[in-house]
Length: 254
Image 1 (tube, rainbow, N blue to C red):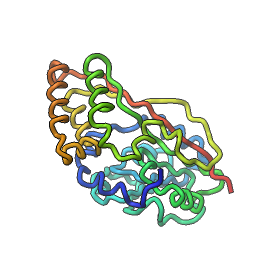
Image 2 (cartoon, rainbow, N blue to C red):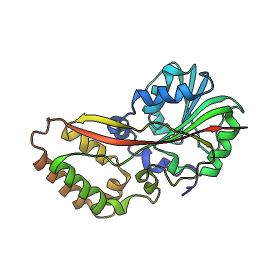
Image 3 (cartoon, one colour):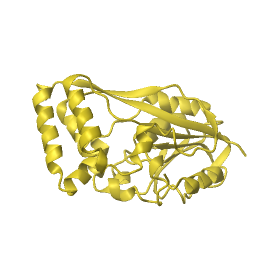
Image 4 (tube, rainbow, N blue to C red):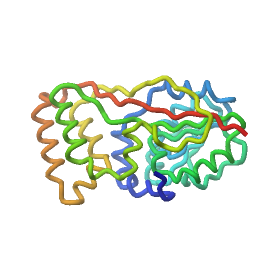
């Protein structure tokens, strides 16, 4: 479902610091795979880059990476890298030169875009046979009782507070419009060993969690955190957490 340009800015600017600290980064292999598919290694564009988690992974594989986002607060939290150049601009009106990009990526953000506008810009700035990749990671998976409580919290308690666009993430972008010649990317996942505070810090960055608190349902979040404290055991004990990664990738033919 397309959204108005810049609609994501308000969701993430107010939690830019927490987002940079608690959101998981992507496997380095994914960036390497996309770079290998690109027709050249000159220039890559990471759209909706947030605080630069995926932009930094592209940097070793390209001469130059342009990373854009509508949130200046998010960009202010992005790490410095000599090959990464940050710009505050919308996905639907980018400043990139025509026929200049070998790879265009959008990680965990395409569901916020006005897709026709974004795709128009992709075709304008892409070189022939450039790769465009829409990347998403799905709902976190945990084992045991903590996993059962997490599943209840996500699907039965705060799910109604997610914006409508969230369903595209949950479906791995399977239903999203994608008018390019598709390229298959092998399934992968993000895996981390997290303690309780790392997990709760991540959950607190959710749009749904913050909206529940603003809507008078803060007790749902408090009860979840209390239950996780009880079920987790030693708060410093690490547990494996996992997110499935979905990639819609294709080539821009001209």
